[in-house]
Structure formats: structure tokens, C-alpha cells
Length: 287
Image (cartoon, rainbow, N blue to C red; front, side, top):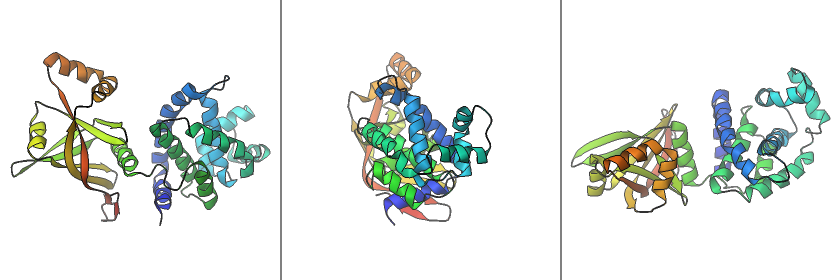
């Protein structure tokens, strides 16, 4: 099975509640970013709606789960509280049951994707995956439609997969060694830059000294019954771009560090292995 098909299966296997929560979170990121790109009075929300409708129409069908997600759009079009059957009628009357009608939107999406950065690109395509998978399946027609936007391996790079998992987990555990004694602590700060993930620890802390003495470490995070393990060597960097990014993300943290004369040490993991496992001992090797 290709990575693309595996990713489709993962999206389909998520619960309806998880999918809707992810769609909501992604929407809050995507719409403002699209506002910055659009011209001629076309707002980010209008482009976003076109993306959603094109994803729904990819297989020419309106599933009840898809209707539940975009019901406000049908209510606005009908100027009343619509039922599923009424939404299906609107769907067909709008020509959305003919995927070929969405070609113009697909062309627009391809053009837009060519303008955005890697994170927004990944967010947009993940949103499309989630919409197509909302009914618990990604059909061949929907897969073909997504492939019209991106190549077979888009968005499935190791860093994308790890970053997405850690984002969903919220916090993660960093394991180090103190001599022959394992040490663990919970972290939440990560920075994605130049297709790498960077982490930060205070240089005055024991964890920094442990990583300097023995850079071999491991990151662990869980989401539901799935968990990710990523081991490697901590490689510290003095890249001046990282601290301003943290200052924007967590201004109070930087203010506290500056007031105390403390410094953050930034590192990435190099080499090693990463895998996603579940409680049934099913494993997916990332690298």
C-alpha cells in the first residue's frame, strides 16, 4: 500500500468528532492566511468555501456526514433551516453532483497552493483529506481529485507526519540519560523551520547538561491509543531566527527568560528512527 493510501486510511479511521475538531482548527489557520493571498475583493472565506465545496463534490455525492459539516452553507443558500434531502436537492441543482463542474475550482486551488508556504500547503491538503474522509471512506474518485492537486507523496514527508502527530498530542515527553539513570520531562514547545523540527530547553537546566553530555535522546507522544516514538541525537544550533519565533508564540516565556538572564538552547534530532505504534503493537515506520 502506498503512503498516499495509508494516509487516506488514517484519515478515514479517525472518529467523526476528531475530524470535525481538526477541520475547525485547520480552518482557523487557513482562512486568515488565504485573506493575505486573495485579491479583487475576494475574501479568504470565499476561497475557503470553494475549497470545501470542491472537496465535497469530488465524488459527485453529498454524504450525510458532509452535510452535517457544511449545513450552514446550505441554510444560507436556502435562507432557511435545511434538511439533508433539501441539501441534496441544492447540491444537484448547483451541478455539484458532476465533479467535472469543479474543474475551475481545482485549477484555482492548484494556483493557490503554488503560492503558499509549506505549512499552509499541508494544512489545505489535510483539510481536503478530512472533508473527503468525513463519511469514513475516501473513494477512488476522491483520491483522484486530491491527486489532481498534489503528487502522490505530498504532505507525507517524515517531518510533516511527526509534526502533525505532535501538534495533535499537544505535549510530548523528552527522554534523556543522567549517567546511567533515565530522565524524562514533559515539553510542548516545537518550532518548524526549513523542514526541520526544533525544540528548546533552558541552558541552565539539567536536561540541557544531559543532552550535551549524551545527545542520544527520545521523544514520545500519544494520541488516543496511538503513540509516536522518535529517537536520535540532539544537535544544538545558534540559528538567530528561532528565538523571535518563540517570542511570537510565547512572549511571556521570553520575557521571563530575559528578565532572569536565562537562555534557551535550541536543538533538532538527527539520525535515529521514528515510528507510530498502537496498543495492539501495530507499527508504521516513518524512517
